[in-house]
Length: 396
Image (cartoon, rainbow, N blue to C red; front, side, top):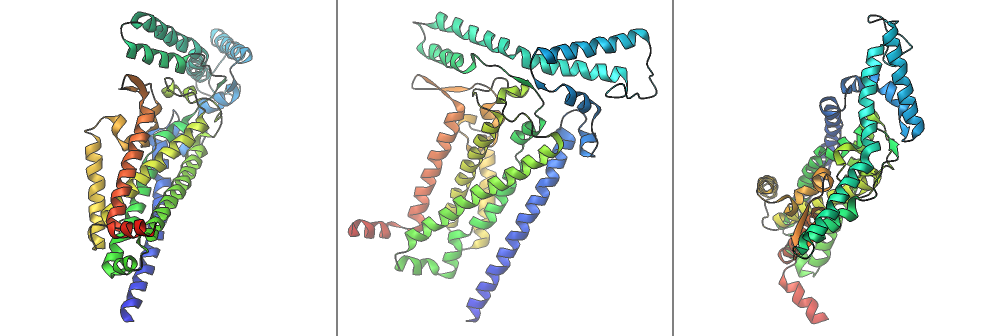
């Protein structure tokens, strides 16, 4: 009786500890967002973090919007106005004036020139894609009849890049940082290690595994543990993703989510024609798939020992080993590539598979899914065993 009471007490302590760790992970994650914005954000990030509005932001807010002739006319008109003020010499270099967004004529002119570069990228984007499409057509004509693979690859390039355009001028710092941000996934990994590394080891430690097997419930317990793991991963990814989006959106806003991914200049060669919000959803699916793969690794490790501390230690060691191995294998074969939107969707990459050009963003999830299924099957044999499989075949 005392042993049972002690065991239940330890379980309660463990649950409270997990709750504390989860809260700490969220708090640290929010601070990490602050650090990310402060050190890696856009121009004027320090003022943004301190709760002030950068001078360039005032000018941007006035010119953002649809990429049409009205926008070009307004930019040209304000450029001429600033040049006229400078030519007349009727301005102060020392005292700020409400006449200008930044308070100074040269400040407005400098920021306006930077804004022109951003507008120019969006406006000239169809021309850039037209050049790529024309080169793809030239390659198709050149290799036709001599190299079928290169013909197919350039046909794929042509289908991806032709006809693209950007309809609005905006800034996308919140989404760029969100796509590059991996700390929240690391926090979820820590939580998963504490929650699932001892799943089967705890049963062995208490002898419950033999009772479960003798009752013929090993299969249902196995499925229940996996369903809990799947739900945990999905909920954790959604919660942390919302926290990340709200965190970065707090500094940079949530505008223009309906724009295509290639509206972000660092994704101009994205091999998919989807919106930013669509890319966010895909990135969450990729994270969920990766974390389920890690969950299978943790559950499998827990079937090899009845020492909970050893299971946790081996789990962290396995994570370190996978990170090391990740640097030695191609990106399109590494499940860790699922964590980087820039790696998968930042540019066109494909692999020759039986003479067909297959984009890497399709290969990585497929490889991860196959590895996850293999781990699941091995874990099933380890946790359930062949005896229950024989019983099921006999009953059928």
